[in-house]
Image 1 (cartoon, rainbow, N blue to C red):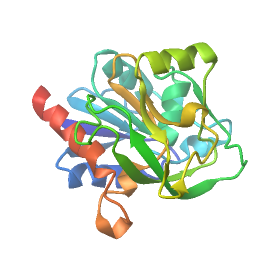
Image 2 (cartoon, helix red, strand yellow; image 1 turned 60 degrees about the horizontal axis):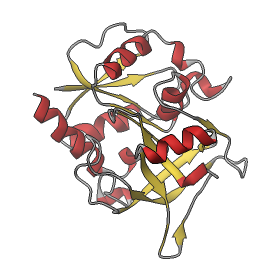
Image 3 (cartoon, rainbow, N blue to C red; image 1 turned 180 degrees about the vertical axis):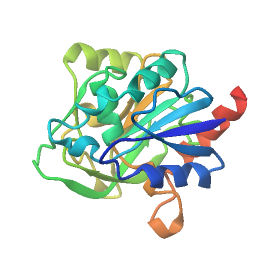
Length: 228
């Protein structure tokens, strides 16, 4: 089944995401944000970038794009939906994931490799990983500090909705932005909508310094094959 990669004005990781999907064996197409129909797609990727220049607040304008009604329809029907970096911000702004992404505690745009621990492997995005596996992935954001109120954080932990958590590894890494509970990625209660700040599409071949992002796209491919 095809995967839709949504393109907003200002997206800059759309083609990288499409390439990473195709490199992992998925069929992927770019879909402009004004389109109003995602019929025929088996999953949706909302890539990173700076939708609408992030001039108001990251993701705050993108949530009003016409395509988001279709993204919500597919999410509500149980189709896999992934938001990466700005895509994560858009999914929280659109109400598809709880919480918000605030400015990094250092108040700087931060671009570097970080380490994550895989907290769940029973999802359509993580089945190719091992429980507790440590991943090396890059981040590139100024508003990546995950925040939610205490009740929401409790629900996330109780519901096993934290999928990726920042960790130190061999003296490197750690929480790069001040995210609560070291959260780097979460899913909705149903487990079909994932948001994460690190960029797996930038870590899918040796020349990029890491192949640890490949598992996410390979997991999605497996999930789509089961549905097909």
